[in-house]
Length: 358
Image (cartoon, rainbow, N blue to C red; front, top):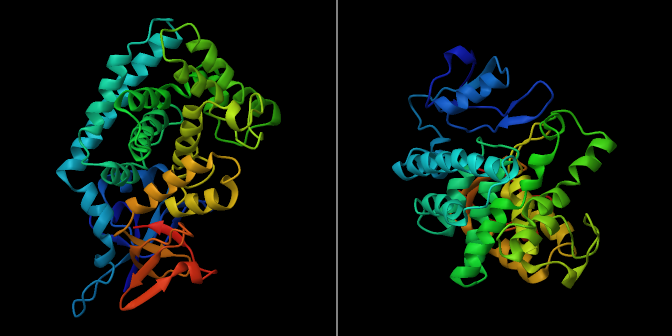
């Protein structure tokens, strides 16, 4: 049974019975979400005044309980709470570091920068666990600082998937941290604008790779870190910017950062759209990205991401919910789902796809 109630009556532990949208039709939370204090505050921030909750019947178990599972267990775990604390501490420290680099033109303390990331990583067991944690952090988005920390963490895991040396993984992690440093040279009103950018404003935003390289070029850094700031928007087919470089003209670490950058941007909420499901992001990479990104890097990354979500419960576009049990290597965005006693091979169901990880 469903019941419409005021946001003031919503309590932690209640389950949302319907998708919740903003006044301009942007998804805030999907149905089946179990309310927490943090989510309730988020709804208030979006001026959501009423919503429909699920009222379980006493005679039957609440069906949604089986899908609360993965993400709620993670969010309620001591590990996640410690990860969340270390993550926010890292963001705070990172803001200070970037201010020193950009505004005060101080030298870059690489050891201190990497120590913050290492401390956050130490709260995770492995790459799969890290992606679980980041997925549960999606409400904490920041256009520069949090995004840069996310990209650095993703680059670190990506480096392990690529079997890079420990030294190269350190450099790659630093590439992720500093790839967007040029954005801090942009006008604040453009960087944080909530409405669509004008053509002129977009051209200003596109200057950030050059601005970033200018900030880093004279610093005592591995050249690959400087190149990542300069080239992370270049694409292998020549469609990127600022120089429309192609293939081997692009630094290999910039190619890796580009993939991590786009993935985090797609799977994070923005003021103009909700976060995409990781599988939506994978589907876009498969359909549009195989020419734009280095084939070896993109396939290694997508396989790693997909394997991170085996065992997770998901919702399909027809509202069926189930568990990912097997990956299709020929169609990574279309795994096999178990829903009740039924197995659904999404690679053979062309009209079905994953829209949410629960």
